[in-house]
Image 1 (spheres, protein in one colour):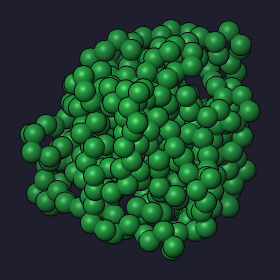
Image 2 (cartoon, helix red, strand yellow):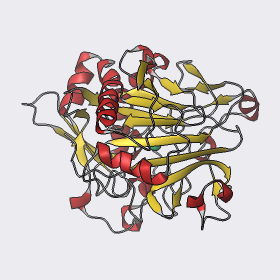
Image 3 (cartoon, protein in one colour):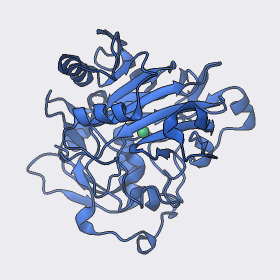
Image 4 (cartoon, helix red, strand yellow):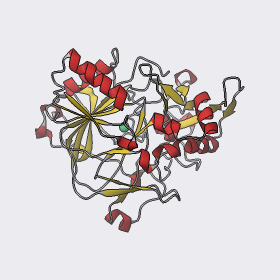
Length: 371
Ligand SMILES: [Fe+2]
């Protein structure tokens, strides 16, 4: 197998391309090299994997996280109609840990695994369904787009975040480049291929902070909302896709599915890779709820429970991370299998109006808590 860095985000440790490998038949030695590449480059794209079966994709995910069994969002409330994720995927009946993503009617003749999914229609998430302020029809016609939602793949409630996500691009859009507008007053923008998946490194995001914010990030903890995707379902996102606006639109806590304080996810803002020791700022800004802020270990800490203030602090911590120079926007080719270290990168969907698309995605709730 051949590993070639792509220097995503201008660094030598974000993104690589792997060639001459068949993930349907991975030897222990192949896997060891793949795992090494994952922890070095955090986004690994294995070319020419169109024949990868859902069963083998699931097996691959489990190999990266021994003991992981169930889908990262395998919780009725996360897939419930009231959740913002409810339209994002269709479950493969025989391998429910693998989701079908994309755009357009699902052609069930393409794959025996699609039996029982007659009539399914895939919907690519677009900013128009989630952001508060929309691009104009003229901007859309010019191929302007947004980061839909910067995130970590995780239920963020009652389950540990997955270590790895695998995303197989089976049919991908092609066509003219599109331009992500940040629309936050900075004038920042980023050219991307249609439907590119954008990644940034959490370690670069941490390194991008001035000293006082870095200290704050290194010592503080976040608590995510109960059933966060249902909690924020009525909310409208910021134009960068980093947070939602504070407009008192959240689902009232008493209207959420049953929840308990014990199942809330409280984790550091900075996660440490147990293999490399690398520290990464890892936050899913749209789903945050409470903060415990500390500048150093001796600091008593300040609890922040006002959602507006929580989001403002989180935005200040996250925004430098998505500067255009830090983003690796993967240009998909049919057969690309992206494997990413979900505890070390953030990612976002981009683009719209590019025609049909088909992907298989898998991530598994981990038995290992965040460290
Ligand atoms: Fe995702």
